Amino acid sequence: FVSYNVPGLDDGNVQLWGNYTVAVVGNESVKFLNRQLSSETPFLLYCAPKAVHEPFDPAPWHVGVWDDSWPDGPGPRGPAWNMTKEDRAKHAANVPTMPLISDEAAAVVTGVWKNRWRSLLSVDDVVAALVREVDAFGALDDTYFFYASDHGFQLGQLNMLMDKRHAYDWDTRIPFVVRGPGFGKGVADARPVTNVDLAPTFAALAGVAPRDDWDGRSLLETDDWRTSVLVEYYYNDANTKCVANCSNGTSYPDGDSYCTDLVSTPNDVCWGPGGNEDCNTECYPTENDGNNFIALRRLVGADVLYARYQTGDQAAADINFTAPDAHELFRTDADPWCVVNAYESATGDELASLDGELDAWFACAGAACP
Image (tube, rainbow, N blue to C red):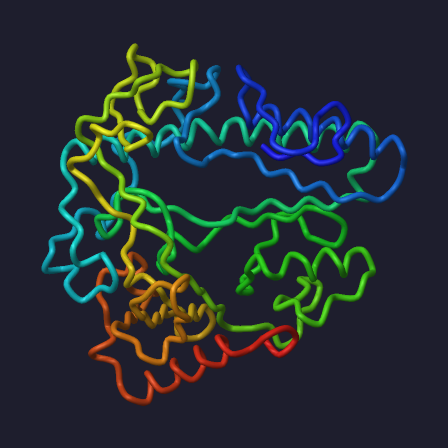
């Protein structure tokens, strides 16, 4: 991880071999809290544990754990799991060309799903430690906690093995929990919120004016809140995941393991490449160069996801979505798994409304955005 101006750690890239990264980040964050709370000066702590990032290795003390209260079985499947090529033919980007999910791939997805749960136990430990430290100084009533993520995740939906990068809800929706003065306990807020709203919220809580070029809004505002959000993405690389001939060269916890069975020696049920050149069959790309999109997610009134795609490489030439080669429209109230692309059956008036709202979002900046 990267460190800057942290007592006891060198600036720059820090490698602490033999330690679990989430635990290191958590312990250093608790030390930071102790120093700042002792000084009684205002502070902002940004704590970003690596979990549950690939290769999804849980802490050694959580390997193989599965509590009786957790869901058992192969993991979440749903109607978008292992869809036929015919049922995916009207989707965009690489979705129509994805292969069926093999038994080996399904086993990897199940193992990844379970190890992601196990990895989150360490995140739970970090959150609990931070709250305990603040409580020990009697500062809970003066402290705001924000818990969020940077993206969702797919595990076999629309036959994409694992990762993110797409417009669908399982890739874009994230947990968002706030604790602190003025935020009611157990209160659910249905407003469409994204990560761009964090900075204006922090500024408002600190009594600082927001910058004019910030796109988001403070959560303390309640009037005329937006009814939709923009999702914008540009193709990066294929990020292919393979599941055959993928034995791991290292057994966990001696190093990162791109396997899901971390109890067996050597580890088993592996995926890659993960540095393994022989792991190159039964492969599932995450995306192709058709996966550049701007998408409108309406969450108030008509519950829909509308996306416009344009093939290209943003690094080579600007993509402005004026020459789209694919569209997707999902009526997510009735079709939350985005199985049926309703674009061709939509009326001209509906598409004009969606395009107008999407274009307004794409063109806006700063305070001009909803």
